[in-house]
Amino acid sequence: MTPLPDRYCPADGVRVPGDSLAWCCPSCHGPLDLDFTPIPAPLKSLTGRVNSLWRYAETLPLPAPTVSLGEGRTPLVTLTDEVSAKLDYLMPTLSFKDRGAVLLAEVGLRSGPRRVVADSSGNAGTAIAAYCARARLPCTVYVPLGTSAKKLEQTEAHGARPAVVDGDREAAGRAARRAANEPDTFYASHVYNPYFLHGTKTYVHELWEDLGGRLPEVLVLPVGNGTLLLGAALAIAELYRAGLLNRRPALWAVQAAAVAPLAHAWEQGAQDLTGTTTAAPTYAEGIAVLRPPRARQILRAVRDSGGTFLTVTEDQIRHAQLDLASRGLYVESTSAVCWAAVRDRPLGGKSAVVPLCGAGLKSGLARP
Image 1 (cartoon, helix red, strand yellow):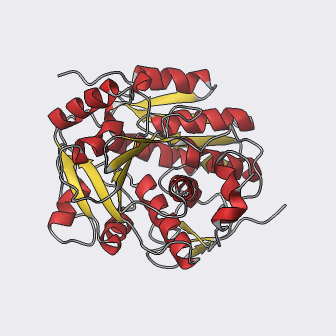
Image 2 (cartoon, one colour):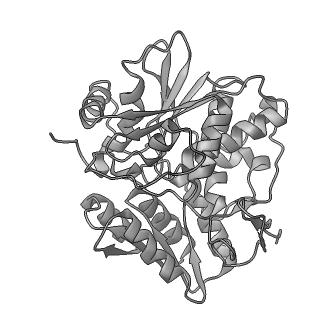
Image 3 (tube, helix red, strand yellow):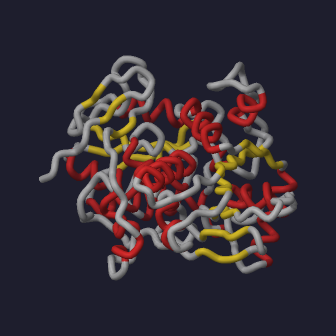
């Protein structure tokens, strides 16, 4: 069996062996990155490959999967002359989180733990539950009080145990991390575990292939914990380093104005989160994260791309969800934030792509 690459802490360089169940830096307790520098395959060599994200095998830190559900290769459709949408809600569990969850399940299967734990406000939990079911791994998902009943139902249907925490998203994360420190436990964290980012980066590899070896001028991405944005940044770096991309797109990060700690730090020109950010109720529950552990990395990725942060109001989110539905695209309210950010914004002829990350059936319409 091919050994897993080592992980390392981006803050202080401490290294963790690839086969370790350690989920964070033993020194600063921050998230880990993967010591892995792939070389993507050229466009012409992708013809005839498996029709899933595993077609980008050269860029993935794991060999051929055993738990795949055919995830990836989602459609790209036009919204306006400038903006297209990638329909990542058409995944096996109806959210983009399948891209990372399949890699976490593969790593968990290799580790042979007694149990798997995860924390989520919904979609990551349902995805990890599904892929753990595929891998026959027992799984507990810690979720905050108020998580969508449909998402809890889906998690249970896959055989995982949802542990509802009497508190917010941060409280659910703390409960999961306490459980993760128990012996023989694999923490399938979509935030701390770098394998998840190497799954989400396939979103950009697919775009690059769909657009004939190029990328749009702007990638508009929702940001809570930043896993899709950081995955996108990984893929862009890989393609550019390999000489397969002439121009790097700008990353436009979108947060709900009600919970926007990263946007506030950006406005202040800060390198990391600043002060105490308050939170108000928001339709965008999937990105309502007050203290994202990879905040410094997210801010740097946006800055290095020449991008920016945008915020949207609750009315904008609600109207954007309805507008997408009127176009035949029924997504959950969190998935509407990127369209809310750009649908009335002049782009000056720039091409842009927004992800539609989760299906509307998971949580229903945002109600005023």
